[in-house]
Figure 1 (tube, rainbow, N blue to C red):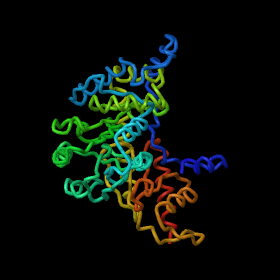
Figure 2 (figure 1 turned 30 degrees about the vertical axis):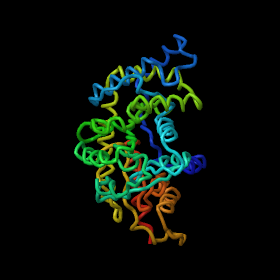
Figure 3 (figure 1 turned 45 degrees about the vertical axis):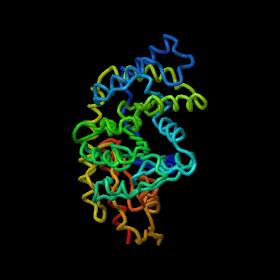
Length: 380
């Protein structure tokens, strides 16, 4: 959708993109200054495969101070983005035929990483009524002797759902009964959280050694292009990821790592300012979506996405007689008719929804939702 939107824009059409999953803010100045200093100080050579010790120490300190979690730097592996971190973990843990349980909706690359590792994805479906969160009973029912990994995100892309401490503890009780299952906890949207403080499933001692935290700098510090992520895991899993990465990409960018140190050592002032803007936009979009007949939405608790239910428009036709059969058809219609780029829900494992990113200015969000409302009203 982003590509199609750019093609329309190249034709002179004013397209508002609500499809891109990155903050619309600049990287904080103190982080950019650290990168410039790193260049001046000639941090331009190969880096250790798991990352500079100073960066891994900054990550350890962050996990302790912000999350109450104790790790050693030997348990941290820095990668070229959290996406590589996820891929490393999946390739390290999954053998052909192993099953990976994934709640839906899920980030688009989860299932494809499982395919690459020759595993099998087992999906647990959720919906808007449950705020897109699974129950312990659903988890228990999905587990088989072949289950190797459970993978989820909180806050979630694409739904913005956030698991509470009580909800995570209830899931941990299920994992206690299945000691051979690893848990991949994608926490990349940790700091964009509009409820209580972020809770990690790694906080429960009974399953701690089987939890692999995946996090990074892209969302909280608006550093998507810097490609800097990491895992925190048991020493055994960290060592295996180190070995895997050593034979693929090796160590990540030296300049990005020095910038990452500054990000974690420089405090959360810039993060909190960005979060305030997202909180305002979240309420704005929520009110506007609720004003569109046929659209059903909840109020996401984190990230910067809405995942509204739009199946009431299936079976309707546009002005040219073309039928809207699924979320892909609707997203394409909104792009061509309303000139607003969204993402179809089928990409995330549920075809009855579309994803809207509110990482855009207030003015663009108001105009985009006006266009969407007007376009949908034309369907018959």
